[in-house]
Length: 220
Length: 220
Picture 1 (tube, rainbow over the protein chains, first blue to last red):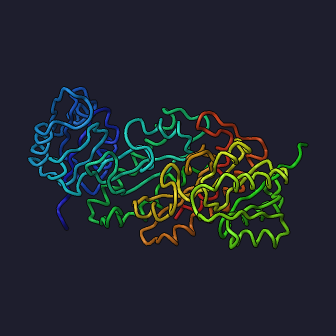
Picture 2: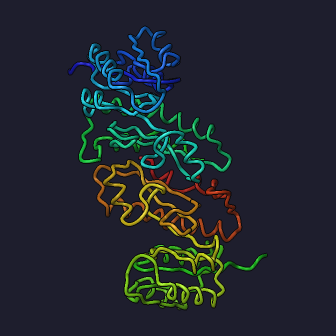
Picture 3: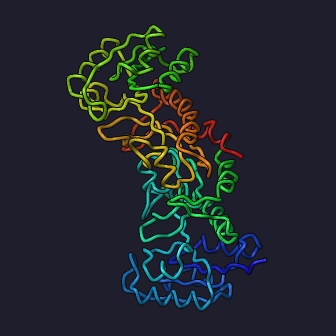
């Protein structure tokens, strides 16, 4: 049997997706092990939780809160991840555009989750964007990270209805449940070597998509 | 009881959505009556089918096959629709950008169906766009028509999975089944006066969305 894949997480805030990955890992359902967490925000709840779990952590500081990290800060994260022999990097609410240092260090091995059905509603406040646009369905997307904003090849998507009485908060909560389900699923597929990328298409996940719990849940 | 709403259809090609609306109307399930069909293409199968059904038809000719119709051709269609006391205009594969003459004559009363989950993949060849982008879900959207391309307020959406072995043709066929279901549904909602538009949001349809057959069908 091949060695267990090692996952490093990057988080800026609450990091509920970090906890979902952690719980899946603890339950032996991730097919991979979370070995460290890095943050760009010393106030990050995810950072504190990682410490509570006994995970090695690293926090880079930057005067700017959003956008691209300075190259040296990103390189510091790369060094940290490499020191923990990370195979796969999972972004969990990491509010930064990923730059060359990370992309070159982990080619095809950085995943992100975004709370919309990409390519609709990339960027910030995706749930509010969907609501205000009047979309009748929205959801979440796990994708490989490239140099753009939420633009990389799509691994899995889950769908939820948008209801007349939704607010951005109720829609976000409904989507979040599915984020916590499909993100561990995507990691498991990646770790099992089941994914292959052809152009923009990621193949090997379609059974996983159709098995997704959301489809049953979305029934009235 | 209020009088039956009268629907005029515009089609350029095969017009399978015209037939779906027609069948729903004949089955008494449309809550409205199709009273005429106009086309910009004398070779349109939909035009021939409408004649077979005994519907009044009108065909405007234009040297250009795509884009906006010349104003006079569009005005001719408006005159035709008005002569049949049309309340609601349904585009069924009408390959034209709708111009001022129609928009001013039928404000808030022109529906279109598009084979993607808008705002993803507007314009031509939407199924191929979704496939090549690597989307894991796609579907179709009924929307009110505005001056843009597939940009008006969304009434209903239905979702289908995109499978690893899909071609543009197999995906298009899967989506088409749902087009034939949600378009009559949207017309029924419109005709019953159940829809209200607030900004970009169309309210009054969300039970219809969650009842949609696609959600059960999408299960493995």
